[in-house]
Length: 426
Image 1 (cartoon, rainbow, N blue to C red):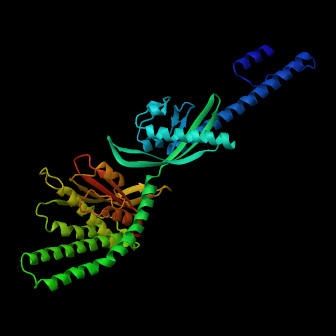
Image 2 (image 1 turned 30 degrees about the vertical axis):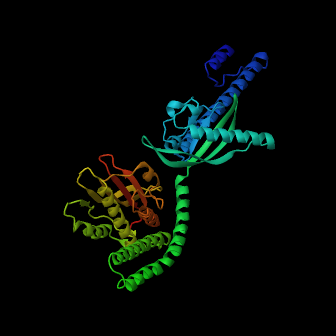
């Protein structure tokens, strides 16, 4: 009986065996054997349970890491990549799967990033020796932004947090970082708004006296001078008046950007508004440049009619300006479309949003402009103030919407997508 039980245990069967009804040593031995197998069975059940819990915890952790917006990177003591989540690849725009086990400084394009984190960990080591502590470190790291194959002159800003990991074979490192470029850009926009407000106040005050003085000089001296002096006076005063008018328009742009009134959201027929605005462009469009495709039965949105009119005007004007810069004889073409977008919300309910798309076949956005297009005073136009798209972004944000800029892939030109999420109740 004991021999059979021993073979069963060896094969992984820990079920109880019949007990020999005897008070001698054989009976005691079978009882002890059953006690042992029961303990082994309990231990195996506990191990299986713990392993299942560990696997579930690992799966949950992997799911959390995979869906985190922040990048998580684990390195060994030699700064070789052990693992990372998908956000690392999205933020740093690089495929890291093929580099598992390699040193970070051997990966192309990461030199500034590696130098910054190496210095940070070195400073942490010095602080640990000096203060007897080994706290994590946190710092902002700027690395060149890369769009496609082109590097831009605008850096991507990472808020990076690092800490040492105790591992059995020495020391490892963990990095958690997130792209805060949009946050920095928003802070910059707020600062520029304050600058614009002060500029509008300081510049506008002397403009009217300058214009009046120029006009008064023209009136008083026009009859007292003869050509060519009178012609020079006329040209000079006209130049002053025209430049003052241009400065006033620029100041108005400053003021409008700095003091954009809150959006007054009311039920808005977006198709009707777009048709009304486009009529101004299509009426004199002898070359058939503007093409419209408005979705029938488009849901009404909650919007500020005045501000949305400004958005549409601005996008169409930008498209026209971009096409005017082309010198290759290609026929200009602008497409304006609307459509309903159906999606599932976080609580599982079906929702609908409205999307506006404006496409042109102009010169498109340069990588430098595309990276900072919504920041004030960023423009490629010789006479532009760089406030147009900044105003559009501000208005769409007020409406709780989203705006995205892209370069077209099917042809040259730009594509602007606006998503409005707030629909009218009915």
